[in-house]
Length: 575
Image 1 (spheres, rainbow, N blue to C red):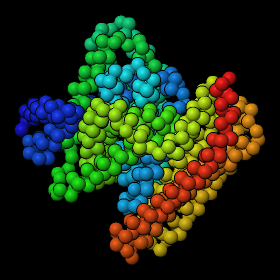
Image 2: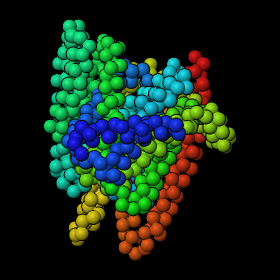
Image 3: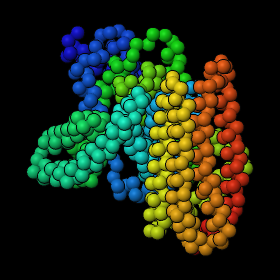
């Protein structure tokens, strides 16, 4: 079939599928993927490697990534304050731990786990916007927070996509090349941002003043595609280049004609349809029902991890009912999951099970969210009634104290630099530990007498680095405690309790990381002597016991802190 006929068949089948699934209140995205699956792998009408389909889908990726970047405005992110950062950090921490634990239990490679984390962490900002709009909540504070969280997740996903080539080389144990790719990525991103910030806003302003609507749209399309192509040529992902272009243009978004932005959105929707269809086209042929079952199982796990993580994180940052409501509206996994799955599959980072599950998770989560949101009030009330009173009282006390602290931090010019410095150190520690875990797993698969010595060397290096970062962070922690004592007129005993709790949390985090690595090594040893199911059950019990112990330890510690802080924070809130 020639290219034009293939394109017509794709669009026709996608339209019919969308109309049919709409009657069942299923999102059109599902229809587009199914249409591509039917005309490609199932019927063989369209060649999945068609250059025209690939070209049009790349335009869709460019425009979607560009629009996400366009929404990343510095003043918007600053207006959300530390609350959004707190919720995002906690959500990411929960997702990483749950996904890593699952990966260790089932014997999944670390790179597989990384891709699952990228898929799970990213809710669809666009679909969440539509759901909130349908409920008439666009003026509520909850709307602003959900959109802000969605933008933060989009940024995390885009950074993750840019690291996929480095992880692919690291998976082949080409460590030097992997570090080179990461370094080049950072350098190229900085160069593109600096150059773009100096040139692009001036060009766009000139076109707005002296050009017409069509010229403006052509320039925007050229910028989105051009930066994507430059990014691809420089070794970055195509999507990251377009995303950077969007972040640069976001500085002057208010100066852009509203009608032009509406037309740009329509143009994006057209090519995004082709991209979703191409996902179905490029899916591998499903040879057995077991592949579908594995994909559905992984999709169900990802959705559960997402809902649990965002709900717990929001509960600490906001409150119980608001947390359950945010959990419902952030159920739909982003379309970026499809880009993550496709890029990882093309790079040879994951197998077809992960790729297929990335499509399933979008299909299921979007369809599920549209139905759950219709009864959000009943679901929230029912979920709240199931929470034990002791847990509710503890969490509400924690939420109230966190809220007062965040209000103080927002207006404190002294505290924010301390938190920023501490955050940089913790982020570097997380990055090195993640990289070290991937290297450790690669060492484990080497059939050599040197493998045990290499494992010991990697673990020793990680331990040394971790304790060094803890020591380096002491100054920031002490400054933070001094700020708290001065701001809330608290006693030194409270400061000592807080400082010890900081160190406890850091060591528990390190303990979790090394536990997951140790259990991964242990699982490899047990697999040589026990059946896979028994080995997995043993590892699961070890991780479960550790988790219960940590929860018990933190619960007792946090109760003591909250009781000590209650009077200080209460006095501040009354002032």
